Image 1 (cartoon, rainbow, N blue to C red):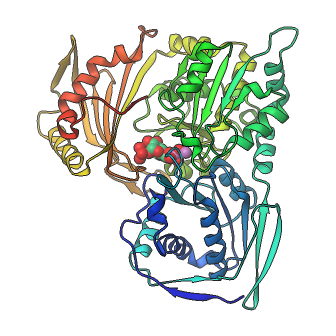
Image 2 (cartoon, protein in one colour; image 1 turned 120 degrees about the horizontal axis):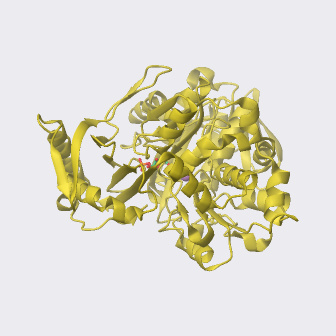
Image 3 (spheres, protein in one colour; image 1 turned 180 degrees about the horizontal axis):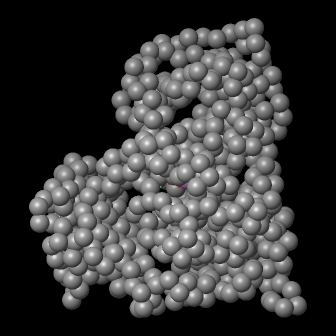
Length: 558
Ligand code: VG1
Ligand code: CO
């Protein structure tokens, strides 16, 4: 086959956000839109590209297979030697990260819009991960974006036809060289890896019960996303759970119409089943398998910030950490500071990074970070360079198996020892962009004007004094790269915090996120929404959020 050079024109707006380029499917379907972006990803790697191997896979949503086909043809046109492609285009985001690392490839291309709905009228996304298995850092995504703005042509081998439905190796002659596509089992490498990280027999005994303990009943929900086949292999085949322990385990192109975001709003069916049923544990994962929600008996909810803190304090129950040791911990800035207290108690290094998993990678590569998380239902460790939903569920089951406690007992004991960071996030989705940008500018002005630090704010009988107010910026301690304007942050004298930022993953309009984090040393058993009311009121007053967005209530509360 021969390489054809196709001329093209740049599209505006191909700037990757928090986690790759995400747009409506129909945007990606425009002539050459997807081709331009793929070519730009490859060009951003040009020094190492010729002769390289890349991993390709996605979450099974609408357009994944078509785009895999384009990646195959354009990779062949650009001198890539080999692609490792998940069967049917299926690979979870953490599985891509693992496969990149295991086979030491140049990187990988992940086709997903994560937790955003799928189908022809919804979202698609493309993300590049580097050779460490992690999402490309800002330097690389800026390079990719710059390349999209002045692209004039792409290179493609149009008559490569490769079937990705069957596992196997296909070889193609391209010019004088050879181009190889290896279609791999989507779950095998990942499942083997999980078996080396966790004590599967111990988890199996927990689930099946023993003379000492009745079976521990779980309900695992893949939300019709990519984790379906992974959950079936791990929970049904390896751990011997019954079909009644899993739900929605077939990946669907439109996620069956569901919004595959594991939180109390979008995973309400799981929550209700666990609330009304005889389950000890529930977990749900998002479309691409990197997010997780953990609930206990009667749907006792574990906030992601607490989940991170509890796991941090219990890592000795996981074989991986017993052998690799526990380095530092990290969280994204908006994530509640519960884990900071564990770090302090254990004498571990603690990092606070901007929102997005790409900021954790350097710390892991430098051997300074073992466990990290985000309030947005992201938990993970240095076993890969992405957050990992199934890993989080297995980590929790390991801890529960070892301690013999229920989920709720774990949390209550944790709060009694460390105090509790009450946390909530209000999302105002798909608001008009201009007023939201204006709100952010005005709020930053207010916060940074003289006299704001030290000012007092009261609501519902509570009073807060501002200790610090800034637009968060971060210098990576490893490569000293700087990320500016990562979210407006008001920290009060008692450590309580208000954070406001605009989402970088939406595909239309603006989504405002308001994060509230408030610490109580003693009063740890309250209702979060009630406990946080005064601070929420203060946040709405200072930001004038309702006035600018025209919304009197958030779309989603987590
Ligand atoms: C959101 C979350 C962020 C997460 C990102 C990607 O970003 O807030 O914590 O890393 O999604 O998650 P934003 O910019 O919309 O707030 V996923 O599961 O989409 O890869
Ligand atoms: Co995701």
